[in-house]
Image (cartoon, rainbow, N blue to C red; front, side):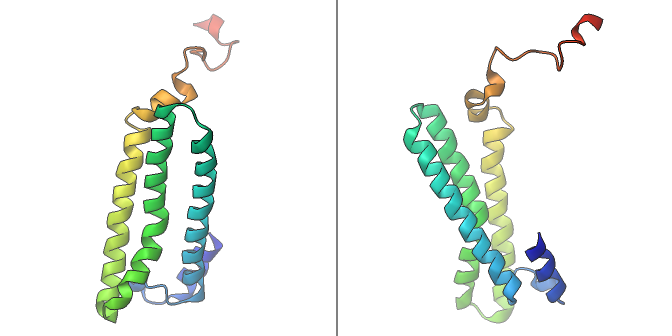
Length: 140
């Protein structure tokens, strides 16, 4: 959060939000890469010990959505070097929006549609009580 505020404070032009011309912007890119690597290492250990194919598929789809979200910005900043300055901002901004929309769709399919998430989560367990607290049960 502090890096985002620092970047916004230093950047005077609102249209160049994704330009990454400041130290704070470069630190944000580094933070995204570090978070992606940390997520990859944690998910690798989880997936390598998981026996259920359904849960492994869920974790792989989750990783795909998260990696697109975290790595689209650094990759697009690197790829935008081949464009001139005016096109660079547009390529990065539109590319980040498209990649994040794709990531949201992937994560939506996992969490909100009750597909794989519903099958692998503890929320689908029949052992969960139907009420929030046991003391309230007598009133209904």
